[in-house]
Structure formats: C-alpha cells, structure tokens
Image (tube, rainbow over all chains, first blue to last red; front, top):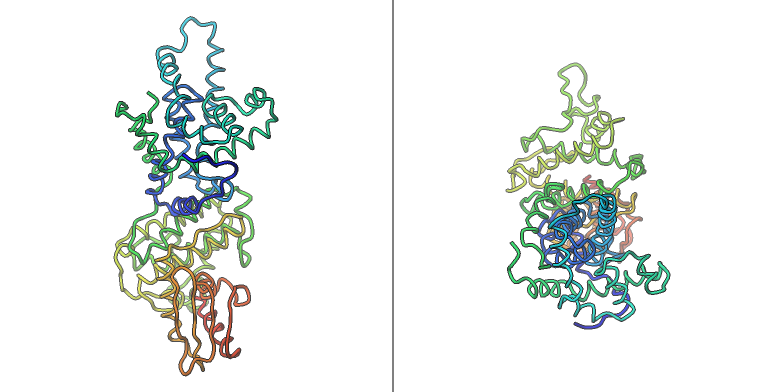
Length: 204
Length: 282
C-alpha cells in the first residue's frame, strides 16, 4: 500500500458509478457492495461491537445510497468515504441507544445475554486486523490517529477531540481527509484483498 | 470472526430493489427513456415539498413539468396497448374537434393542456406516481424490448412506435435536465450509445429540411456525427456538442443559448440553425 496524504481528488469512476446508480443499474450497486462492504461492515462492527447491528447498518447504508442516490454528491466525497461515514454515523447513534437501554436495565438482574459477550470477544481483535492495520499504516500519522479512534475504536468526534487535545472541527476535517485517502487506497482491490485475508469461509 | 457474512449481499440487494426498482431492461431504442425515467424518479425522490413548486421553464413548476411529460408519454399508450394515465376525452360530433383541448384534432399542445388541467391542484405525489406508473408500463411492454415499426401520430408527425420511444427518451432527459437545473441536481446525460441514436433520429428528420445552401454540421462529444444539411456546395459549417444539438432540436434551448461555432457564409449558417430549431420535436 502506498501512503497517500491529504485530500485525494474524486475519481472519474465515482462519477460513472453515481450515474449508474441514478440510472437505476443494480449491477453498479452490486459492484460497489463488493468493493466497500468489508469496510462499511468493519466500521459498524468496530463501533457497535455487535454483528447483527453491523449487518443492519451495512444494509441501511447501501440501500440508502441506492434509494436516494442524489443524497451523495461526487464533487464532495469519494463514494467509499461517504459509505463509511454513513456507517459510522449510524453506528454511533445505535451504540448510544444501546447504552441508554443498557443503563436503564442496569438494575435488572438479567443483562444483555449471550450475544453481547460473544460479539465483544469476536470484535476484540478488530483494530489489529491485518489488512485494515496495513491500510491504516499507509496514512499520514495525524490522519491515522483520528481515523483509528473514530472508526475502529468507535469514539465520537468529540471524544476523539478530547483524547488528542484537538478542536472538534479539526478532528472532523482530519477524519474526512483520512477517509478520502483511505477509501482511495483500499478500493476496489484493497477491499477484496481484505475480505480474502480474513474470510476463511467460516461465515455462513 | 469479523468477516462480512456472505448472506448479507442478498439481503442488501433484495432490500434495495424492493425500495426502488431498477431501471426496466429494454432494447436499445428505449434505453435512453428507461435511464431518464429512473434518473428523474431518483431526483424527484430527493425533492422537498417546496422544491416541487420551484419554477422550471415556461410557467411550469416541477409538478407541471412532470405532468407535461406524462401527457407526451400518453401518445404511445394506444399503440403500445398500455392504459393511459389520463385518458383523453372523446367528443363525437358535438363540437369541431380542433376546438376541444385534448381531442386528437387539437394536436400535441392540446394533449398537454388537457392533461395539465386534469392534474391541476392535485398533490404532487399523485402526479409523480401517475407519471412513473405509466412510464414503467410503457417500458415493460413488448414494443420497448423489440422495435415496433407501427406508425403512430407523435408530436404532429408520423413516426414508428420504436422511434417514438427514442423521442420520449430525448424529451424525458431534456425536461429532467431543466428540472435538475431548477433544483440544483445534475441530470445524467444519455449513455453514449443512446446519444448516438438520438442524434441519428434528429439528423433523419433534418434530412427533409429545405435549405437553399448546404451546411456541414459537425457534432462533437458522445455520439459524434458529421452531417450535411441542404443541397449544393458547402457554404457554411456549424460545430456544436451532441447534447446542445439535442437541446436545440428539441426546442429546449434557442440558438443563442448554446455554444455553437459558425464558419463560412453567415446567412447559410443562420438558416441551418433556424431549420434545426424549427424541428422543435418536443
């Protein structure tokens, strides 16, 4: 992977893919799913620590892109960054809702049950995942830190800002720049490679 | 395991097409129409209620522009055996046909006037969904798959049903482009192969234009073409993009609103431009 620093200009492919979505070509959606679903799912899982939530969020993000393709503007975002940012936003909201529900139940004897422990175990190693780590390593350090904290440790921008002693707008800017570089660096071949690395055919 | 579950792909694709059906698969002659209908529908999904009331062209807002499209699409319904969203009234012997808006004798403009009157004051959603349902029915009929050469009355001309599908692709794209400019969302141009078919249809119509001198027409961009209008020695040359040619031909833009380069005899160039604009095939 090559280090890419700063804002990567939007690629012509994103514009062509966007036209395909506008024209109602479902094969375009299938191609985008194949290119970006790993990362969208990974980000959602990193934040929510819950596989079923990550699946829901992945579904929502791609369906929203298909259903309302004009919400995405290729002049503003790369497609990969837009999808990942959409997953992150939803995941933070979900996690917040889950935490609220959990603390409301805190007095009760029965807690969340088997699912939550299982998925916490399974996500513990997520940030260390080989392909993602390699991709993150390719980012400039100041971008890598914010992307890792926001997208893989699941912190909100405010939490990242407090942790790194930065302003919230600086964090937002860096996340955005980091995502441009990241999505550009990983898709589409990086996305597939990552899937094959940890795929192992164990998911059914 | 943190791997993406394989079954998720089917769930995503299934949910997506349930929420927004993909463009109807058609033959090449109806593809521009299928793409334009899908794109315009996507644009309409993104509009707020206030945006529906924004002025587009003429004195039409977004809703009226969509109803105008529906009226034009209706001209294909009889031959395609698809029920019309707004059936035109049939008056028999009571009045002169030409005096009744919407009657066959009142012509193309009358058809639009009548359908607009029927949708005046209705909620925008009703007009939008009626337009979409009629368009998708047309796109699903056999004539959208295979060329049907049955001659129909279309915009004051006789043309095959197959070419009328092409003309609807033309009009839906251009009016969608007008709406897109009004609401600040770009309407995608037809695919290259579709643009070539649109240009071919326009040039075939123009071949009958009566011009005192010959003008060379150099069309650039997707579907590029090099054509001659009129007879005799070449007196002038016009250069413009294929999309601007379509806009001029459709009566969607005036000659002074597009980027056109004219070389040679100014009168001949002027007359050729006027001949293209006079087609006003929309």
